[in-house]
Length: 408
Ligand SMILES: [Fe+2]
Image 1 (cartoon, rainbow, N blue to C red):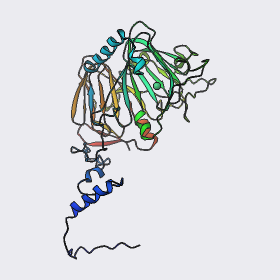
Image 2 (cartoon, protein in one colour; image 1 turned 90 degrees about the horizontal axis):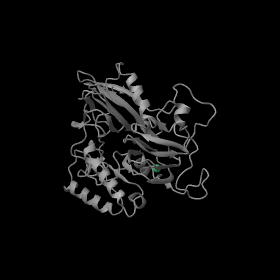
Image 3 (spheres, protein in one colour; image 1 turned 45 degrees about the horizontal axis):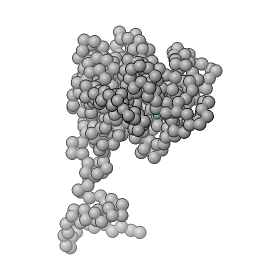
């Protein structure tokens, strides 16, 4: 088949309003689930960013957005503890006087953070879902297993637990408890005070991939039938005893927990260990873009704790300012200590303890510790996923404003 082309020099026999006709064509095609390129809907064809890593430092988020209904983009966003904390207090108050506990009829006692750029979806970025949960004394979240990778970052001083494949993990502020995909886990609180923690999941990513699923029918580890909780096989601290001595890996256990092809070994990272490690490095120069930063790693592979989500903790010393950086990954941060601000995409977010900020991919951002004490920030990003699919890049700006490739 040949396609006839009209010579540019040849005038049209009868001029028509091509723009209008193309839009009418698109309207007709839509009834058959077909979409036609027109001038009017052109923004829906554009990439979010026009520069691919040059040296101009451009790449701001398109101001006009896109016109197609389903085109969504993660926006910078800030959730203050003074704003979201009271909702957890109100849930706690309801639970204390409840005829039926909210965790019974709502499955969890949580607030979920919704990014204003994502149309009300239950996600903070295109790949991550965040809940902040409260477990009052006596609460139990039954044993279950799912395809999503998940974690808890503990905000309360102590209280509550997560049992991961029989390992009892007592929750203490600053702890990071991982539930790799395909691990049975249950949560609860048998202490005398409520516990609050942040749940991070790669759930939206799995929804895109159409492989998000959950199974609640726990029958393992001595359970006779659909038990609500797992029997504790390994006492609190098992992960630390196995892997908590840097550079030493036990040879007598399988490092595989959960599903997947890579070992998912350690599930409980202690906040006290994180803080001690950061403090021990405070006199080092650190990174111009991240300060003193430590990545939570899988002790068997040396890589990120999972194949999708990447976790890190960073120390910003009093007065420390980082230089602007941007990455192809999106980052969620929670302030574990201190006060300061983060600039992202031209917006400034002043933060304090327990505040949360989302930094969308490829927007310039930098942190400043304005306090007289250390600031400690935990981050969760989808950098692990992007590295795995060959899409992770990062750029920084020098003090004079020129752009340098950090990872290309
Ligand atoms: Fe879960």
